[in-house]
Length: 281
Image 1 (tube, rainbow, N blue to C red):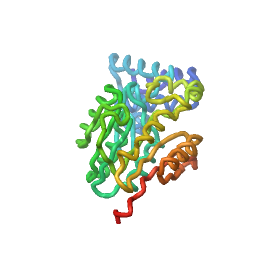
Image 2: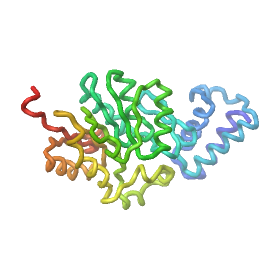
Image 3: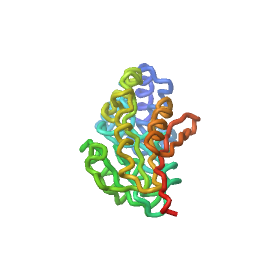
Image 4: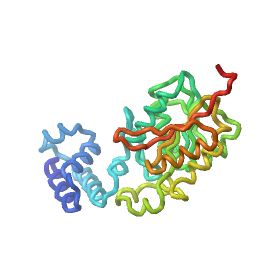
């Protein structure tokens, strides 16, 4: 088949599947799978693709027609300046989480000890380490499959990161950090039921949490004092409606709590800072 024939078949398939921009979806899959710039794909419509490769590409387009995320189909996802491996064992990194990295970079002093809790694909710590090599990075996750993906991604970028299997603080007793980032599961069970079909391809344990999505964050915050250095802070990504609840909890535990909006003006982040003792000046 030629690229033009593949594009025609793919666009028709994705159009029938109800995609708003079937040509964009098709081109994203084909250019990603063929490792061709989009413009080159479109400007060389008569490029021949052998039958075996054509069959594989058509299978990928059929998977997309079933609304499987393109990142799982291609096996990669973009995050800031990175191209990360992703599998159904990890969440697909979101643009909002790129903003969490920006916040973390602003709060990380030179040489800071940084923990990423619930690291998934390793997107946050790898981005931090590649953009700030001076930082000392530790990343924790309960899922051994997720940690395998994160370690592979770190190896791609020669990012020196300590990866730990841990149920929240369980494997981190006695450890102190200057900065903690956390994009823990925060979707409530009711919210999950109303999500788009693409979400159901992602690991549910990485998305949802009991108590309206708050349980893991609350557990983590209740032990946070023991793991932050004086003046240190933790940055949480969450649903905007959860923001005042987490701020209130933080303040009740003697943290300075600040809500931070994302680029869309939604209160997507909470920063909890441990007070500095009078002796640290």
